[in-house]
Length: 253
Image 1: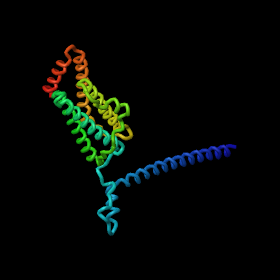
Image 2: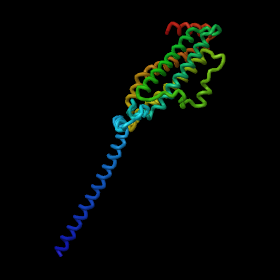
Image 3: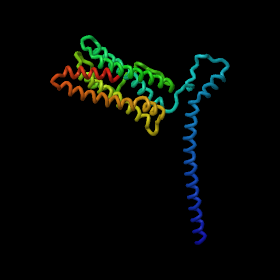
């Protein structure tokens, strides 16, 4: 009886140990498979591997692409298109501000202050676009000027379309909305780069250094100007108030 109990206990112990051993083997095999997959995936991104493959051939053409010998790294490919669209949106904004500058600089409007202010915004947007394109190419990307910004809704384009006989008040409010939309998009792109699984600190740092502080100041300035113009247009002698404001814009630049 006691002998049978010992056998039963021993048999149960062996089965338990055997199950644990099989579970450990299965777990280790899974880890091995995952690591092997990652190693294969990583090896496929080596420039050195591409070069060895080409050099191992007796004859090779100079036209053979080295697909992994580029400046792309991190998760830049995940955000590349958004940066292209943002650069194109800055170019579009630059022309829009330039058009407003020309409108207020003609002999009929004769608002040199508004002309200079909008020209300054146009130049800044143009410089931002050039700098962003340079950053894109530094990170190994190409610039596609046909990749139009998709963050503008049909309603945005309809409301913010420049109309004829644009007043100083209308123009400043239009620029404020346009500038805030671009600032919002910069924050959204930054949020995309900060995702835990696909973070790219280089892009996030670039956006912070290039855009955020200046955009916050400009939005604050534009909002102040819009509210000032509201009061001026409500005054009994609005034309004189706007003239003096235009003089102020000239001296503030």
